[in-house]
Length: 192
Image 1 (tube, rainbow, N blue to C red):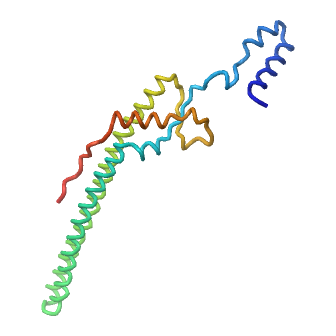
Image 2 (cartoon, one colour; image 1 turned 90 degrees about the vertical axis):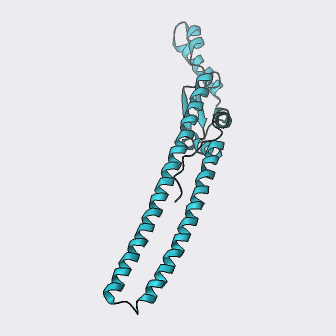
Image 3 (cartoon, rainbow, N blue to C red; image 1 turned 180 degrees about the vertical axis):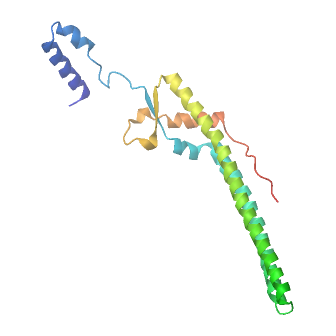
């Protein structure tokens, strides 16, 4: 049964049951088709993937990550050479002297591992800060659209099972976000 038909039947029933029924029938609640819902749906995840600024952030982070990987690879090569030198010295060094060199080597390896972890954490934190700028702008754009259209409720598309396509404001949101924030300059940690 359509919403209009259900509303008409409800109005007819109410007019029979109540005195002065014609007045009640006219003030019955409008059907969903008669009154536009002040609701919008936004695909936040899709926008965060497609936004120009987010792509620029990813590119900057990946460029720095590649530079870090090159530095780590060079450091690994140096450590392998040092390890080979150490194994060759085993036959000529006294056991105590050899053990001292092994401890020094292990300290170097541990330091390289700490630096790798620190750089990874710095990159992750830098990425999160930069993406937070994009999220803030996204929220501002959605709020602007909601205010302009009289939207009272905005839902994440990922939380919706079925929604009428006309409620989705994702394309307009992405377009405005790209205009407002085409790129974000990422404050990257310095190279070694």
